[in-house]
Image 1: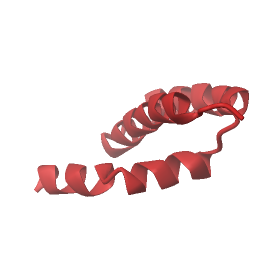
Image 2 (image 1 turned 180 degrees about the horizontal axis):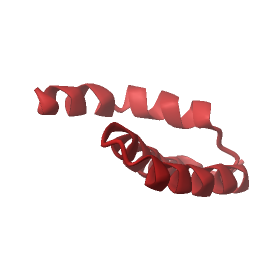
Image 3 (image 1 turned 60 degrees about the horizontal axis):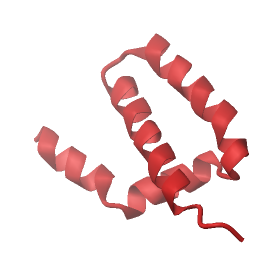
Image 4 (image 1 turned 90 degrees about the vertical axis):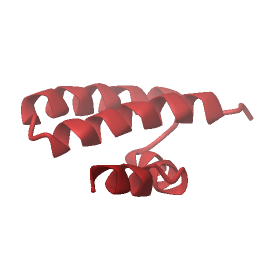
Length: 69
């Protein structure tokens, strides 16, 4: 068993960037990044669910929402 924490952190950062692009209405850029993420996740044995779960549990979603207020 390997430690997937570094991969999870790196891919969560990409997921965060994807969400920012979506939020800014930059759909083409978001689609390109999503394609990169889709291609890379299987190589590190992660899924979108893993990213969503990590993002929610890191408290990033709440801190970014409050920063926008």
